[in-house]
Each structure stands twice: as C-alpha cells, then as structure tokens.
Image (cartoon, rainbow, N blue to C red):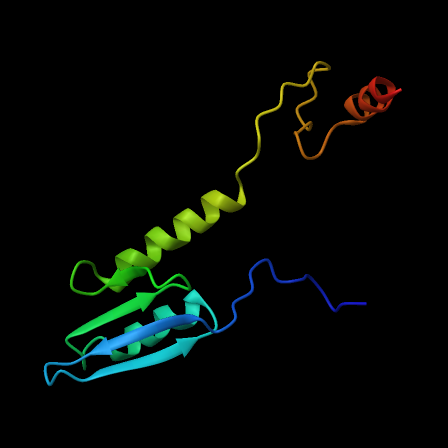
Length: 117
C-alpha cells in the first residue's frame, strides 16, 4: 500500500539545463523535474550569459535570451494547471451538475449499463 497520493508526473532525469557563458563554455546539468530545472536556472541566472531548459525530445522549452525565468515559470504553471483541469464536455440527460464524461452520475451509469445489454 502506498503512503499517500501517487505522483501525477514522473521524470527520468532527461530534462537538461544548459548554462552558456561568454567564454564559450557550456555546462549541461540533468534535472529530475521542471521545478528542479527552474530552480537551477534561477540559481545561475546572474552568473551565465544564457540558460536553457531542454525537454526530453531535445526541444528547447526555455531560453533566458528570450524570456525571464519568472515569466516562463508562471506560464508553465498556468498551462500545467489548465491541462490538469481539462474535462471532456458531457451533457447529462438528467441535468445533474456533478455528471462528467469521466465521472458519470448514478443515473447515467445506470443508463450506460442498460444500453450495453
């Protein structure tokens, strides 16, 4: 049995922070989450020329040359929250306000069982 909620996201350390300096030095650091990557960028933002966050598919999702990390963090949190609350539209024929496509009300559950037969 688990001790609480299971994590909703898992990372395998393949999120990378690239720190570039004027001396043409590049340092790549692996992170276990976007939160860790954001903190790493914040910690080094004054000591590097450009900081980048690179996703698993090698796409650069953040670069300090184009945006402030605080602004990007807020946009990332908004998008994460938006994705977590997205619910498929469902019109309940019984007008139940607590009926959703992935969590049907009791009447819709009974209808679904009845329709299967």
